[in-house]
Length: 125
Image (cartoon, rainbow, N blue to C red; front, side, top):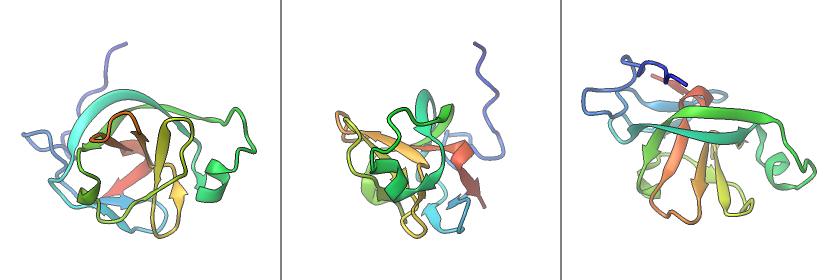
């Protein structure tokens, strides 16, 4: 499968985010410009919904999307505003800390320094 072109309006020459990353729903700032690296990695994220519905276990096979374009953050303290779900296996999903909509991203507990925010699940300004 041929990867899509890198979104030049969002990614700087050094591979970082040119614009701030915001929650699509409430507009809360998730990342400042220049704080994340563009990354291509195929990850499954459940469909967007409020945080309690992501972790209550009521849907054993949730619908979702296989996403490839992400912002990679290597330190959780880089985020301006992000929340985490309870563990789902060895994964924590990232959600907006203000409105709790998500998941906007993905974090594997086996890799303490990789936090992925899906470009399709956030806005940019």
